[in-house]
Length: 71
Image (cartoon, rainbow, N blue to C red; front, side, top):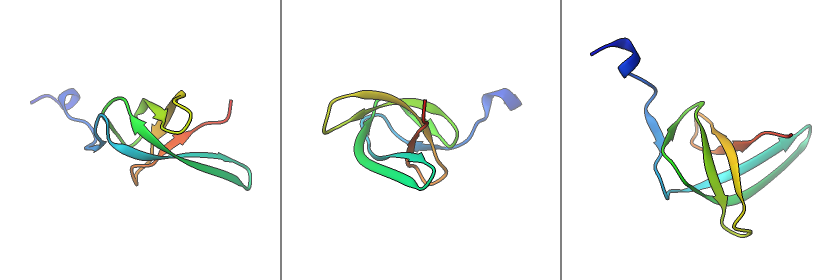
């Protein structure tokens, strides 16, 4: 094994339900999403908001939530 073959453990699997979180200052909005890829803490993956069917790019947190960054 080489060091580059290792990475953080997968926290989210493809098609898994995740909590989408958007934070801006004191405002936090949460929604249910479905992961479109696997990912570990710090990974950016696409997530579909299950209510609106909109796809966003989110960063997986250490708790497995999908954090959407303000643009």
